[in-house]
Length: 127
Image 1 (cartoon, one colour):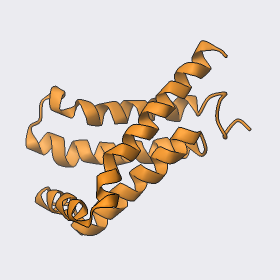
Image 2 (cartoon, rainbow, N blue to C red):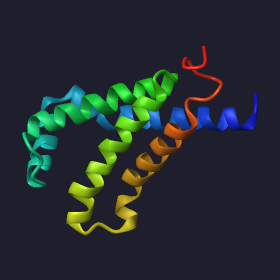
Image 3 (tube, helix red, strand yellow):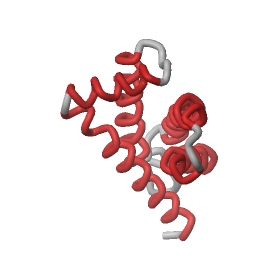
Image 4 (cartoon, rainbow, N blue to C red):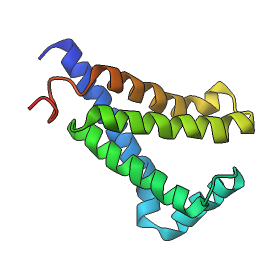
């Protein structure tokens, strides 16, 4: 196992599990999904409930795909766009500090890294 391949695997495991964990409460509880839709409505997202369901679905599916290393570049690009939107529509208008934006920035930069590197040697993409 090369260090690079192992490093990419660790990034995929981190981002995949984190994305899936981060939206699991919305899948388990309709009340949480409604809260998320209300949050998005507060920041002027169009069709807040549709936006909430779309964001949750994107994060769950793309997170799983990154975890297993299948369609990694496409999944990474979609997650990059998702968190770029979050940064520009929520964090910047809210005046959030870099500290408050760090979780979203981590998702943004890890997804960008996986877009450029691909899934690595230990993935379904390589099979």
